[in-house]
Length: 407
Image 1 (cartoon, helix red, strand yellow):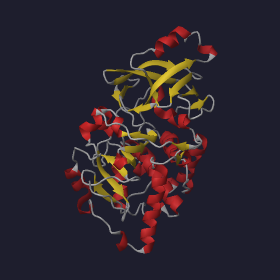
Image 2: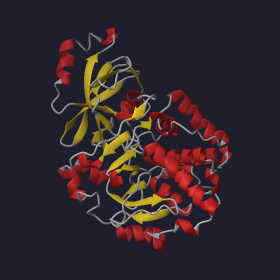
Image 3: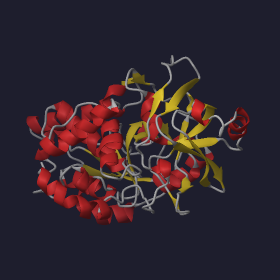
Image 4: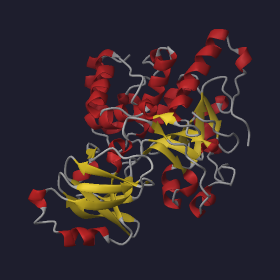
């Protein structure tokens, strides 16, 4: 485990140089790009209802799409009530920040949003006529997806994600089977060398090794599998508790067994200033918790001696997370040759920075779980632009002895 003192000394340097994961291009976010926004459910919503109401706990900006960029529409005050449909989407469009520049957030934007009302002290600035006009914005309204955790809640189960009809955007980059049409073989081979696609016969492992890798992999699958109803507690927890869990890990090495998404995106990433790009930290937290639930020390495989400590100062960058897996003995697989199993860590491209990392949730990686969609995202209905930016799977990782089938 990296000591607290050493971590503190590294923060200033590494937060500037290492956290290029998921591509952020500007250091001056506008009001709602901090990723620290919160909202609260107005009342528990039965799963049979088609929409859910939320109260914003602080001011947030709603946006509209113009020429492929999300532009600011209006700042909604604290206490605004909004409505989000049950079939909401997370879109990863570029957005205009407060400095006028264009950047992208791997957390994305929730769509569509309907404004219901504002707190009484703001009603003079937001008469009903203005609210109605805002709700009629062509193309609909978008809001920063940091509120997903509140929308999903911590109780119950994530629903099974049913296969969508493949859209034009998906079919440009993937075959109907999910096999990528594009290749990163040259860069992946250069990066991971002779161990790329090197199958490890499970029977060649000792009984202890075989049990270890199968147990850790089993715990990963339990958290991200979307072919069955999965307990939300694997990923979601109370934000205050998640923040404390993040602190406890850094100070004492304590690893939680629940709440991976909230700890990573609402705890660690917010505390250290990279809330817009928490993809690799979320995957790192998933992995730490899988080790912990399986009863193994993550520091046996991820440590300073190997040059791959699994802590945000190192692994919150995509390039470092992918190499951390490789140095820990995980096998890199070319996605144009092999099918990503449920629980595999997928990489946009060859796992370099800037980039994106996510987890296969079913259908050979066509349904995935990532920081923007902990409930599951079907790439078959994802836009062409979003796939081109973030979801061109080039390489994926599995533990030794867990070998994927060929296409």
